[in-house]
Image (cartoon, rainbow over all chains, first blue to last red; front, side):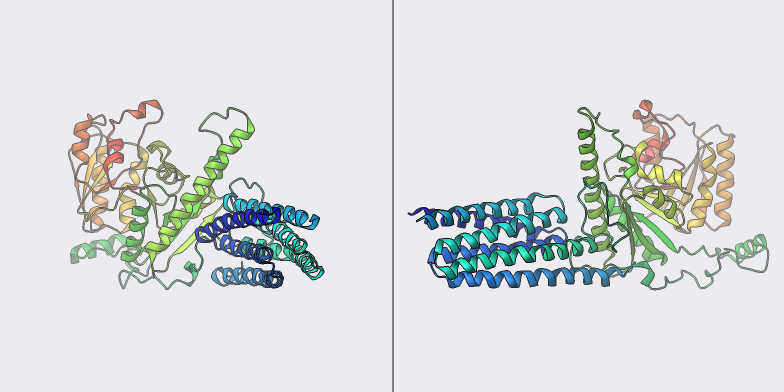
Length: 95
Length: 437
C-alpha cells in the first residue's frame, strides 16, 4: 500500500470514530443547542468524508460534492440557529 | 511523489484534528465550549482534509477546489459559530458549572432552562382561573360579611354547617431533588387539583451554600473551586431532573415554574407569599441527602410565615393526624396553620401535649383544640406526656399517623441530636407528611 493510501485509510478510521462520538452527542443532547451543534459538526465530518472518498477513488467530482456540502452546511447552521432562537422566543416570550 | 507525501500528511493532520474536535464535542461540559470545538477545530480539520486530497489528486482543478473549499469554510465558520452560540444562549442552554461570570446576563433575553427540545413551557400567567371550592369562598374574610365574626360562626355552628374554608389560591412546590422529590411533586399536584389552587414549581441554585463547608480545602483554592464546581453541577442536575419530573407529572394541567440561578434566599421570600409550601424530606437546599437539622424543610419553615408540608411519601388516605403541642412559642401557631389551610377537614386531629399535666402545653393544646372545633374540625386532646419519652414509647405514639403537625423537626442541634429520643425526632423519622406552621 502506498503512503497516500495508508494515510487515506487511517484518516477514514479516525473520521469514523469521530462520527460515532458526534452521533452520541446528537442523541444524548441534553439540550437542543447541543443537538444543533452536533448536526453542524456532522456536516463538517461529511465534508471530510467526501474529500477522502475523492482521494480513495481518484474521482475529482467528490471534491465538488464536499464543496457543496460545505455550502449547505453553512446555510443549515444559520437556519438551525434562527430556528433555535425563534422557538425559544415563542415558548417563553420576550422579557 | 512529493505531492503524494504532502497530501498524505495534510489528510492525516486534518483527520486527527477532526478526531480531536469530536472528542471535544463529546467531553466538554456545556454547549458553548462544545461549539468552540466543533466550529474551530472541526473547520480546520475538514479544510485541511479537502486541501490534502486536492493536492494528492494532483491536477490543477482539484487543487483549486481544495483551496476554495478551505477558504470557504474558514470564511463562513465565524458567522455560523456566532449564530449558533447566540442561539444556544437565548435558548437557555445551561452554562458549565465552572462559569463564574455571565457577561451576557441582561444583554440578551434568555430562556429559563432548556433540556428537551419541543417541550412547551406553561406559564402561570396564562393558566385558567382556578375554580373555587365553595360558592361563597370568594370573600377573603372567612366568616362572611355583615354580622360580627363571632355571631356568624355561632350561627353556622348552630345551623350545623362548618364555615367555608379560605380558598387556597397558590401552592409552592420546591423542586430540589432527592429520593422523595417525586412524592412531594405528586402531593403538591394532588392538593392543587383538589383545591383548584395554582401550583408553582420553584428551583434555585443555592450559591450561598457554596462555601467549602464539606471537605477541607486541602491543596488550596483550586481544590475548593473544584469542590464548588462539582457541587453546583450536581445541584443543577438535581434541579433539572426535578423540573422535568414536575412537568411530566403535571401533564396537561397548567402549572407555573420558576428557576433562579442565584436567588435561594430571594426565592424563600417569594415562597412566603403563597398559601402553602411543599417540600421533599431528607434533602438540603442543594438536593443532597441531609440530616434533619440541615433539611431544606427546616430552613424554609423557619424563614417564611407560610405553612410548610414536608413530604416523605404520599399516604393512602389520611384519617388521623397527630398534633404535637410542646411549650415552645411556635407551637401556638399549630391550630392557626391547620385551620387556615382548610385541608383535611374530615381528619381526626389528636392533640398531644408534651409537658406536665396542667402545664403550658396542656393549656395550649386545649385552646388549640377549641379553635379547631370552632372551625369545624374534630380535635381531641390526648393525655399529656413528659417531653422526654423513651424511644419505644415515642414510636408507639407516632405510629399509625400519616400526618403529624408540629413546630420543628427537632428542638436540638449538634452532636447530641444524633441520639433520637425526642418525640419530634421520632416523628421526623417516621411520619410520611409533616406540617410545619
